[in-house]
Length: 233
Image 1 (cartoon, rainbow, N blue to C red):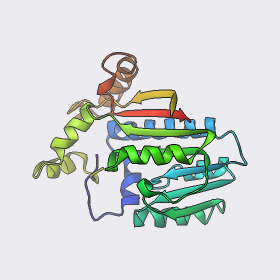
Image 2: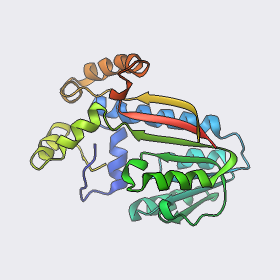
Image 3: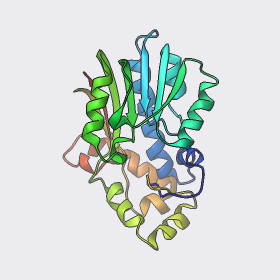
């Protein structure tokens, strides 16, 4: 969940992985671990190049920089660009580029492209996907994650952001809440059960963990929060 606040958005994003709410923390940490594992498995050319579109708090930049000779972080948000430049001080093979991915001026091709939790925030998502496809090398892969539109969490978030309701949501979580080619791998994750997630503590998280693999392999997989893909050109 996310709603604009005056808190540093980089700090705000990192709060998700350290949430005091077990279910909220599990939802974000499990996605992060899936992405990191996918990055490691598909970083097969240490002399190659990688691109992350919308690096946000920079969670994945160190892993990308450790597995590729050249890495580009591409964003248009000032706070995230500043944070990426700070990370680049430790990884000299990381460069930071400012721009709009729907009108991207990058001319090179990349062996690995990472775009996680970005597409849903772009008005011209089809144009974005075309640009990402253009930037992939002929044998490259793209790792993409985005929320499922009709998942329980996405539906409840629409209610959570209504005037007067968001104050209650912030009180419940007591944390920052801000407005947040060819498929070769596919994975769906993230069970959200209202009230059990907020008030069930570790029991609520454990119930969600047990339900996740059952829902993910059946007809109700649309209820899961995040869809994850690895795509080849």
